Length: 336
Ligand SMILES: Cc1cc2nc3c(=O)[nH]c(=O)nc-3n(C[C@H](O)[C@H](O)[C@H](O)COP(=O)(O)OP(=O)(O)OC[C@H]3O[C@@H](n4cnc5c(N)ncnc54)[C@H](O)[C@@H]3O)c2cc1C
Image (cartoon, rainbow, N blue to C red; front, side, top):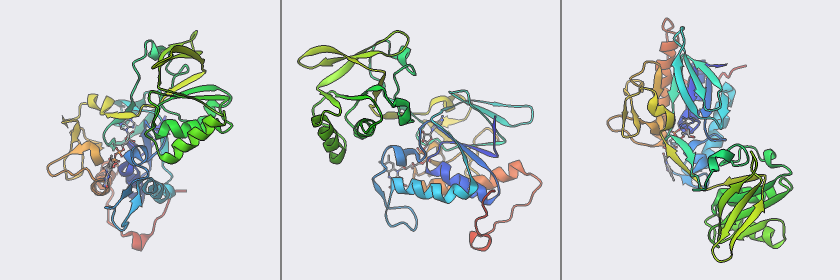
């Protein structure tokens, strides 16, 4: 059981900044994210795009903003449960929330901060028969740890940056064999990555199969091969220990919708005094919340996180007095 003061669901920019503001009040945080890396939309959707409305940064790449936030919160030593979805919530007899992920990891905290953005990014799954039988038995939709594929025969599907970048990475001495399958001959990814894939194919270091789709998965209990269908040449079988369809992720509110929170149009209603939901002790900040005048901007989420932790402190320590202290006066005193 992971115990913390504020359990944050979502490691996007607003969840990350919460750790800093909570740390100033000596509150410890743990973050859960269904994605394998922190940064939310900034890392997953647009890491290389410049943002122009972060105060004091005339321009910053979304990926660099995530790195800066990670650096800023590091003195407060947050815990992370990554690659797991916050699924069930209940209360124990001491009025603490117990949150269980889809992988069964349990977390306990007196306060929950939902910073879940647009919701869980769910993988877009291809319409292949019996696919679910092979999920986690050779079929994965996200590459969490490339070492998992060491010495294996891997088939990757997709035409975007993820498919191209992982093909290049796994072909560099990690996987035994890499096949990239794409239903068109042109790719959507960065021209640099496309060139690298073409060079690897020409050098015979990967199998590049274009104008083709995976139409079947086979194996006895675990994946042994995939069937691909070429637009002109028909079907063939490719031996595979793993098939990784990388067709992008689409956000869904997911399990949070069942937590008895007041929800309007896929967003959680909050009171703007402290961004608390209708359930005492559960707050919602960033893109996931709604209130009159709400703007889905990172800057607004930072403000919400700052006010929210003040209220969380009072909830956790009702008898303690909270006095605002400037960081210029107090500095940043991290945790041992
Ligand atoms: C292309 C693009 C450009 C943008 N440009 C700007 C800009 O210039 N300026 C600006 O201010 N904003 C911009 N935005 C919006 C900005 O990215 C969002 O406002 C910001 O990311 C919201 O942060 P967040 O922390 O609330 O949520 P998110 O960044 O969405 O992060 C939420 C995280 O919660 C996780 N999560 C959700 N549900 C669960 C669950 N049940 N269990 C575990 N994890 C869960 C998700 O996986 C995700 O990582 C842009 C957005 C896009 C898509």
